[in-house]
Length: 450
Ligand code: TRP
Image (cartoon, rainbow, N blue to C red; front, side, top):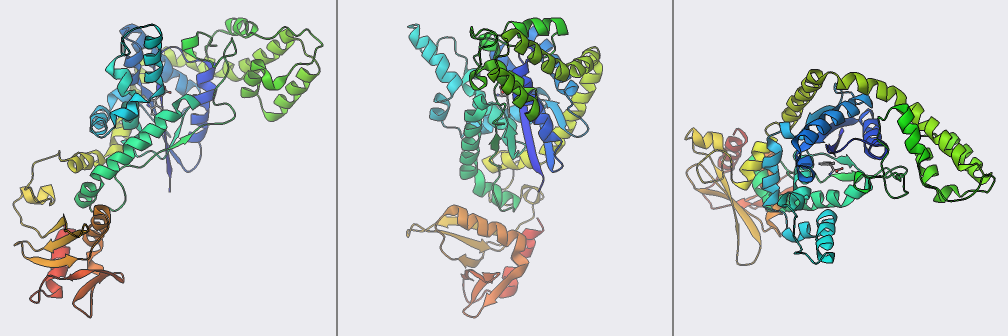
């Protein structure tokens, strides 16, 4: 099976080394794996939550598009698109909003941090907090779930959002799975629950002051600074006051962590030794700069070329959006139908297209008995009951069997005691003595042809 890998980057600010090492580089590496099918996108709707200066929003998404391409993303291989070009995403976001627990969203770190800050300041807890910030995890779940992504490479700070995406997806499956199975005739679940992937080695980089590199701390090293400015930034990294010749502790050094992120294992081991041998901080910074510059220089060059050609960038992203929408295909229509939207049809749960054409069909009806168990009946086109199912413990189990009968109905067999079975498993029995095996098989065949 091909693994579908998906990740997004919020298009605010200017990409920095932390974004590069923590998100862009691992994502691009993953996209090169032979069994990977990758979807990478600019989360420009998410950007609106954090920024309301249109010029900055516009500039940032263009810069970030050029950054990913400069860093080696191959748009032929990877589906690379803008979130805002995919109209199904905000629609999906609403379907998910309607199943997401509000209590779940209350617990989101970003929202809670904003509330805590207000409370500390003696303000109303929700002062200045937009509903956009609150809904952020749902929109993100929509980004992921609409593509049935299997794996999502992100920084550690996004792990909770991935848990929420799984949680929301699971709720959708639970609530709408039966309807989806009966509409599509498929077994399984409507939405794939995504796995989070955090690169343990370099998931987050320290910034100039030793805290996590983040634009909110104003401690970043922008990815495509001119070389002289890059060097100045590296030289301004905060270190302790150990003198040259004094041994230095690599494991507790933010400088060493940065060095590791831009070096192979051998170079890292040599630097670790240099720390133990008492390398001067100035010298260590120079070596770090050399490592970063060696990585970044060729990318910076490509970036410079790309950013000069916005029309080409536009073409690349539009092509990506077409590919992305093709990947959604009719799947989103099925989700809409599963929640009760989609085109009007006779209210019997049968295939909308056939119903619209006025053709009567056999049908399954699910119900619950006073014994608390779940059953279904199969009726022919005239409404005469043909088959009465065995008891099931859950509506889901009954729904799954119905889905199988719809797709594999031709393998149904008669058992000796006027019962029916599918691949050796008893399904139920004829509804009364007048029903023949032929009638059941014909009804299942008619359903299969829908
Ligand atoms: N919230 C992510 C971040 O800030 C960006 C993002 C939006 C994302 N939608 C996503 C990441 C879907 C992975 C999958 O880094």
